Every structure is written in C-alpha cells, then in structure tokens.
Amino acid sequence: MRVALAVVVAAVLVLSAPFISQIRSAIRTNFPGHFVTIIGGIIAALVLAGLAAAFLRIRDRRLFRYGSIATALVIALAYSLWQQTGKPEVDVVERFHFVEYGLITFLFYRAWRPLGDDAVLVLPVLAALIVGTADEWLQWFIPVRVGEMRDVLLNGIAIGCGLLFSVGVDPPPSFGVGLRPGSRARIARFAAATVLVFAAFFHVVHLGFDIRDDEVGTFKSRYSKARLGELARQRAEQWRLRPPVVLHRVSREDQYMTEGVLHARARNDFWSAGDYVSSWNENRILEKYYAPVLDTPSYEARTGHRWPDEQRNDAAARVAALAPATGTFVSTANTYPIHAWPALAFWIGAAMLAGAIMMTA
Image (cartoon, rainbow, N blue to C red; front, side, top):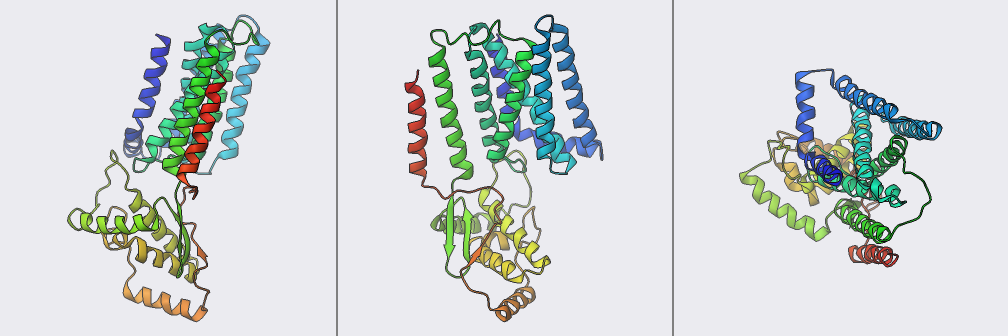
C-alpha cells in the first residue's frame, strides 16, 4: 500500500504539469495581488503540519532525529536564499517544489523502510529523481511551463532535504547494516533507470546544434540548419490558414515558434540598448530562419514581429556606417542551455554508464 501510494502521488505530480499554469492563473485572477501570500501560506501550513507530526513521533534518539530535521530545514532555507531571483512569484513557486519533492521522497522512504538495510537511504532518492526528471521533461513540452536541467538539480536538493527529514521522522533501526540479498540488484536497476531517464530528458531539452551563418555568425538551435528550413516552410503553410493567435495552455509548445520569439525579444532588447549591430544580426537570423514568426499574427504579437520598412532601413544604415565584421556575431537569445554534442556519442556514453551500473548488481 505504501508503494502504491508513493507511485500514485508521484504520477499525479507529473501528470498535473499541464494544469498547474491554469491553477496559478486562476489564483492571480480571483485573488489579484495575493498570489505570493496564498502560495507562501500553503507552504508554511504544510511545513508546520509536517514538523508537528514529526515531533509527535520522536520519542528516542532525539538529538540525532531533531538534528536531521533541522539540517534539512537549514539546507532548504540556505538553497532558497542562494537561488532566489528577486521575483517573489518565481521564488515562491520554486520553494513549493521543495515541499512537493520532500513529500515524494518521504513517501518512497516509508515504502522501502521495511527493507531494513541501507537501500532505504538510496532507493527513495533514485525514485524521486526519476519522478523529478519526468516532471521537468513533461513541463518542457507545455506552453508557459519551464523544464530544464537547473530545475532537475533543484529537485535533487529538495530530495536530499526530504531524505534527511524522513530519517529524522522515522529512522532505520540501525545504520551501516549493508545490503540484504536483492537490494544491490534493486539499487542497480533504479540507478541505471535514473541514468537513462535523465539522458532522455537531456537529449530532448538540451541537445541541439550550432548554426553557423557566414553573413551573421553563430546561434544555437534545437534544429539543424536544414531542419530549420523545413520547419519554416511547414509553419508558413500551416499558419496561413490557422495562425497561432490563441495560447492553449494545455497543448504541446511549438519550440520552433518559441525560438523565433526569443530571437525577436533579443533583437528588440538590443535595439532599445542602442546595440544596433547585434539587433541587426538578430533580425537577419529571424529573416533567414524564422520568417513565419516575423510575418504571422500570434498571441505573442498581434501584427507579427517584422520590422516596418522604415525601421529596417534605419537599422541597415546604422550598421553600414559602423562597418562591423560579418559572420562574427554570437547570439545568446536562446535562454535554454543547448549543447551541440553528437547524439549518437551521447547515447553510447549513457548506455555504457547504465550498463556498468547494472554489472555491479
């Protein structure tokens, strides 16, 4: 029953990803100006309830158990302060992740505690990491949600805090007892699965290409230069009949459009800052590789992102007067870290690591 409960709660957490933005939007709409207060209050209530339940259970080894819980709280607080963005709504959402993954880790810990060996300290971490990676992977596909490696690492810190809290609440009878028969193989299977799940996530979200253009320079994309050309033709045809003028929160995000919008934002930011050369280069990237994003009305820009002729001519004149070197610009518009690693070599490495872990069973 404990295993089933942990799995069900984990599945609900992952599968709720498409609807979380709707819930947040509803809170903002119905309680304007109180989003941070409401989410912060929920966090505080959950943490206090967890602490109260923990202290009611502690009857022996008090110094160790209180110390474990206190360490979890200190680490969580320190990491939250270190990583805070200064944007209250973003920071309070990230702190909510600590509660979510602390709970997931606690449930898996309780499920495997009857094993009675050191596996109870390893298996919950691996299971929660798989859940966290799957959650971030699904978020990456959803408009308005963000899923990237940084968030997986955040989940990892939360999982470590959850394990410390769990040990404080209900510690194993003893530590250092080793692994019982079957536990080593169980750990190896979960560790190998963790490696492969993370590799799949990393491939989808963070593997891509360095696109080199002799006129402009270099920019990163999840797509090859040839694929960008194919997508431009496809989107031009699709959007001619059905322009993306409505944001569907429960849908798959169009990553091609997202990349184009990021270049448009970077172009506009450079222009506002007076960096006309960089702005011009970003605009040339858009014209050459993301033209449908420029010309199609969307929920991001009702008239599209293309510069009026007057502004484009002005930009061209300014750049010509500055006479910059061609082909040297390096775009940083794409906010996701993208690594131009060969996918085959990446997967060979991941498979070898997973295989080596399985051989330790």
